[in-house]
Image 1 (cartoon, rainbow, N blue to C red):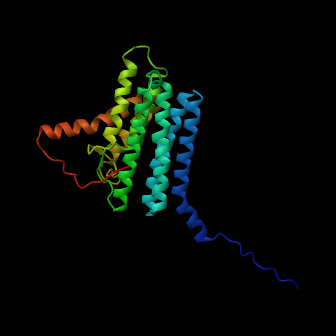
Image 2: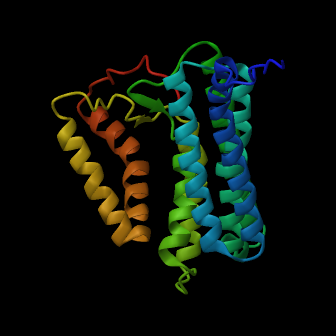
Image 3: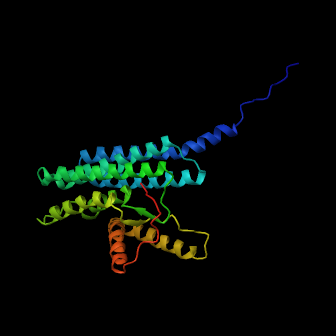
Length: 260
């Protein structure tokens, strides 16, 4: 009489757990891949699609950080991989995008401005990694403009205008804006991190309502809303600093760290 052996190939909880812990790195690699695709489409002249891919890369970057914090897992390899993905998706890709879209019309100066933006992003990420290795991370405010937020400036500009306006003032003005971004990234200007938003609080209904309104506006007028929100956030840091300076009041959150 043959005795049937039970199939021992059951779901291994440890294996499934390892796959869960690998999820943040998978999102980081997706971020990197989207940045690579964005570069490819910029070279082909498909600037709208290249800009949209950078936005999706930013979403992947946001999700991998949130997931890693939720699982309470962090490693030097994961942190370095995230920074390498960020310098491609939010450094190289937006620099090439805005250069080929408009700055190439400024001989020599255009390529220099795009390169300075890239250097600023690299310095921003390097400073973030140094402080993160020391256990210093952002709570309420980022110190300096995060590179994903900086990348939204060229991205939202491309989506908003579609093609560079014929005004002779536009490209020099755009060059000045892009040239300012690396200095904001390496500065000590405070930017809200929004990590302190607690959906379990009594005020979470207002937060949910606000995000619902933003999503509705994004669905109706995506390029206008992205451009407006990007401009508002980039200006929020310097405006906050000026207001505090005028009030002669030091920022309360001086102990806060950096965000990528």
